[in-house]
Length: 54
Length: 471
Image (cartoon, rainbow over all chains, first blue to last red; front, side, top):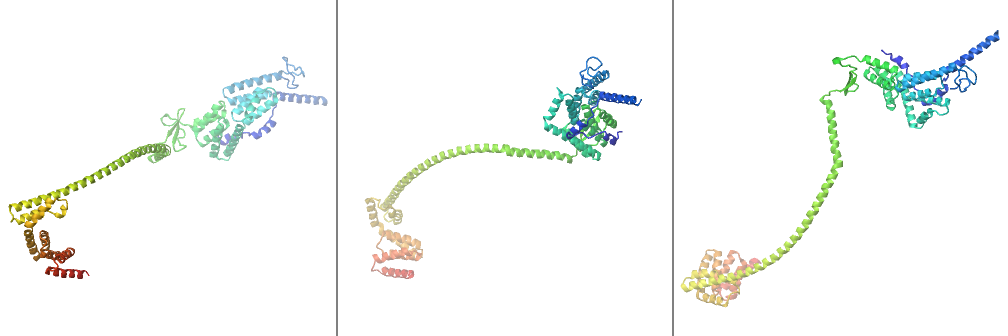
């Protein structure tokens, strides 16, 4: 038996034309390569910090 | 394929020629992204739009520069009614690939029909209002609003699903099933629609006679809905005579409208046609009437001519009648002469024959021989005839029978005008019978013709009495 309230929560308001600009600007476009590059950068900076500490 | 770090075009090796980085991992991710794109494309081909969206999102997470995947994702969003999300994907796509890009075509298509775009926006607003109604527990209003949304855009999958949920909530299982079916037709892989469909199917319990009976409740007064197997049966409700009278009234109204239409559209033409025919007949009849009037005038002229001829002939006939009376008088005179020759003492026979000789009618048309014969006969028998008539008349006078007296005394005076008594008693008879004018004439004649007689004196006295009584 479906729970109406729970099912209703799954429905979100549709985006209206006026909201298009905000959606585009706030869209998170990062993909897997961006994440990897970030991780590599963080790993590199951490290594550098450890070397300086020694 | 370009390096994610320095944007240099990569070659067949695993090292970027620009920055010298190891690009094996990057190449694998791009390859994986393409695989997801292909899978998404396949699913979109069989209208598994939810599956396609999932694959394309994966593809874009692996490689945000996969332009085809982004454009296809936008197209799928557009198809399911999420136009704003679709537009945002195409705009991003165009920013990432400024060269030749099919996103241009998609955006131009939407942009070039502002009415369509406005309608889409209205649809989205109405959907949001309906969702708001749902949260405020105004489910009937939400259903009405969603029906409007779907009438504007039948491909709006989310609206179908929400409407299906509302039907499920209201226990309208067959309608919920129908809406879920529509959603699945648009998006065959929509999990939510499948779940709702299953819920609706579970609620459709087997009924009597092998029918799967859903809510046999009638959503209107006219039909009963139930499911038989996979088919929905919509059966009209049998109505009573009273409810059927509505349709009878409808038929009556239709007949009245038909008659009114014929009155206003057909009858005027028919009437005009009949009028023109009648006008032609009237013209024809008036022409015939004129011809007959002319004939009548001719006949009247002929009648007038004939009338004048008749009058002329009648005058001729009357002339002949005068001749006839003269002839009759001659015959009577001849008869009297014949009686006298046979028996001179037959005074009565002679008198009756001469009585038919009316000298006033004969006038001057008689011959001298007739006059001579008449005068001679009067000389021979006039005195006798006069005496006979005088005696009869005098007897009648004495007996106060003045009419007989006047008749006989007149004849007596006609045959013998020398007897003063005859004239005097004739005057007295007229006087006593009340004919004063004739009496005066008789008395005047007595006084004139017999002036020295006693009768003249008495006549004088009578005249004086008459004059005094007149005065």
